[in-house]
Image (cartoon, rainbow, N blue to C red; front, top):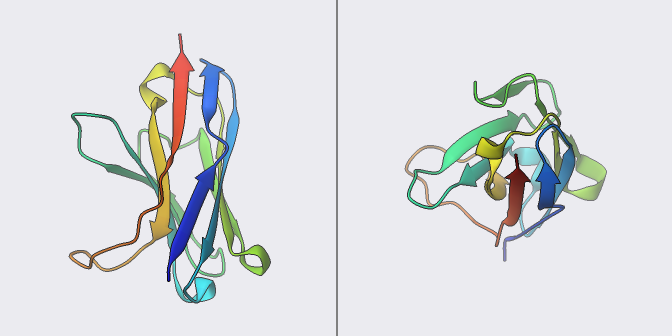
Length: 118
């Protein structure tokens, strides 16, 4: 059974920092790129960061590039999202999951809420 548990969200002022953590189980973690996405009510889910299995490559949405950093610890089946210089528009529920082919049903945790105040 695949389990994804996101944590580390909270309320922060604009310009501040947060570090999100996602612990995964139920699949071979090192077989998959991992990604963070976020969802704002009324908007489509946005994938914002991805890291390949051995951290060879990372890529980011333009909206977070230069401010957020994704990393992973394969020994702990954990992926992180360091969020720096946050903005009110970063307010969302953040999720992590494996990067599966488009059209493949994915796995979702409960997410972690990030709220950025002006």
